[in-house]
Length: 54
Image 1: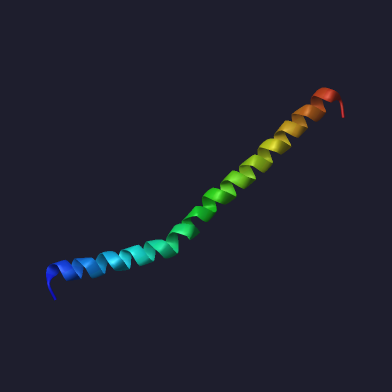
Image 2: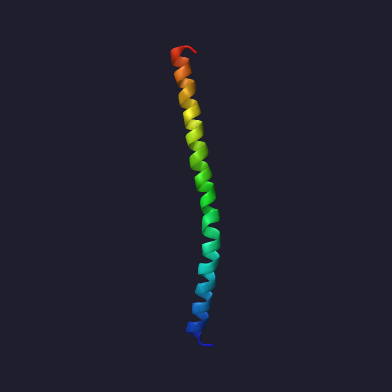
């Protein structure tokens, strides 16, 4: 096998591995965005309650 064919196989393996891992690596970003928005809304509601006297 020539060097270029070995490199081609290597990069194909890396692409396949990346295709599997990329969605899994996005999960923490998605969870951070969701929980951050939820916590921000809770803080905003707490401030509103304090200002209105509830």
